[in-house]
Image (cartoon, rainbow, N blue to C red; front, top):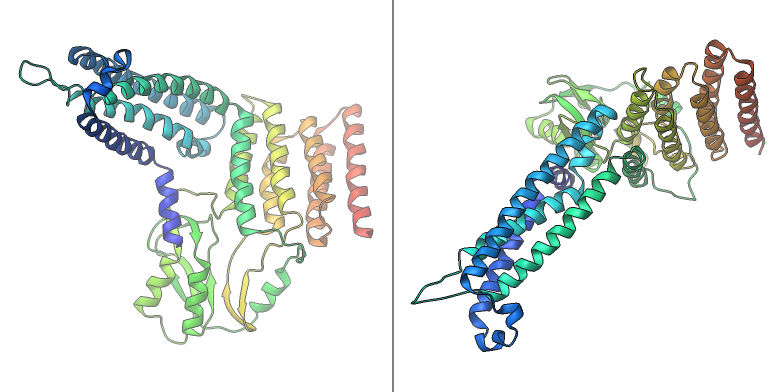
Length: 441
């Protein structure tokens, strides 16, 4: 199942899959209409001469015109996409390009234009004129005209879509939405469970003596996903413990440790292959199981906005707002323990994110790039106040408190204006009060 999901994700990331499917459908549709034309009585079609009265030469000219114009539109569309990709890469970050490539709208639009072109070619080759035999697939020609009108509407819609999707707010919101979907999948909301941290439990388990046999990775790349069910199943079959050496999103180098298994004797080839197959490794990261990568993309946009050559405060503020939305989604949810048990027996020691690591991933680099930028400091403090009001977990509140102290230190070192320092100190006091009051409750 994990490999099927990965295959589907890879197919979605390709430009050619959806257009190819639409082209195939257009071929089938054209063949069906041509067959229908050969079956339908011409006398019935003759009752509507304005719809079906076109001759062979007129039909051929119309199909040639539509096919040629569709190829021109395909070229214009590709040019628009390339310009958008180049602009998005230079203005925001190259890591968001996969979002444009994965856009279903873009893939469908390209497929529609290519499908109309293919449809016209199929219909065109069946039109015959001469003294002996004349065949004009009137139904197919009429639908070709309708498809051409639909192509014009699609082009206008696509221009609107491109103009909308290249805006910073749309890009950031799209990445945040994908990240929130990953949060909902892997940190599902359960009112009966309280958010907790299990760092102490992890350190306790690592004090036990085990006979670890290390399995190395076969390729270079990023760990995109891990099939936890396969690791648990293998640990059950071997009656042992499996330990992940690298977490999702980490870059692994060939022949370096990937996973370890507690065995007295070296593992056989089948066990090694099963453990390696549980990890999906590729040359890029994805958000499907990697919430930190979604956060990383938004942080990159914020860092680009705060770079000396740009200084786009509004975009950076939007990034902070959406980072707050993502962290707020996790604030009261249980981040499941990295230790998987069955009937009290430890089976798998996994590596995963913690609330503190996600909080640091979100704000550490933005804070370092915001030296002297009062509006960014204030927005970060407002985010901390929001997050502090959403969780009662002591560990997570301590993590927020540490981030607040770092902002206070940065303000003290880089903000000279008395007015700005007063604004920051006032908000700092409010955040600290929120943390203290919530702790008492």
